[in-house]
Image (cartoon, rainbow, N blue to C red; front, side, top):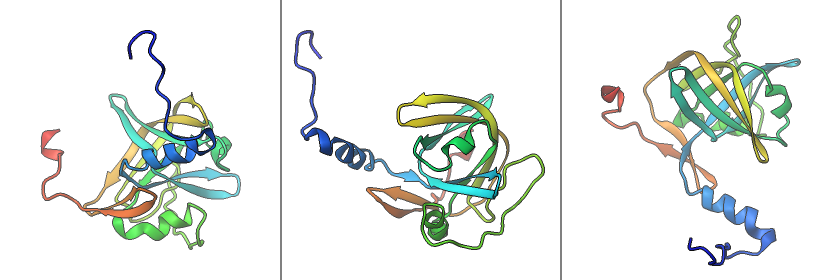
Length: 175
C-alpha cells in the first residue's frame, strides 16, 4: 500500500464482518481431527480443523483452540493427542463437535493422552508452549508418539464435511 493511501476496508458492515471472514477462511479445505486428553471426569475430546505441523526437529505440532471452548482451560499444560480422522469417521467428528454421543472405545496408554481407535493418524503430544492468538490460544505440542495408516481423509470445506482421496503416490518418497 502506498504511503498516504486509504487503508483497505472489507466490503461488509462491521456486524457481518466476522461471519464474512469465517466464510472466506472456510474456502481453505482442511483435514478434520479430534483432540483428545484426560480430564478429571475421564477422557474427553473436541473436533477441530485448526491443526498444523510446525517442526520436525524438535517434532512440534500446533492446535488452535477458541478461548470460549469448554475444554480450553483444561488443555493448558496438559498432554493431548491429535487424532486425524478417516473419511469414514464423520460421525466421530460430529460426536466431538457436540452432536449425538457415541460409545467410545478409548485407547488408554500410560503417560500419554488417550486416543481414538482406528483413526487415519494419531500424534501423542506433551505440552511445549502456548501463545496468545486473539480469541484463540495456540498450543504447541511436542510429538512423543505417532502412527498412521493408509486411507482417505475426512475433510472440511465451506462449512461442510468432504472426502479427501488418498493419492496413488504420496510424498513419503520425498522425505
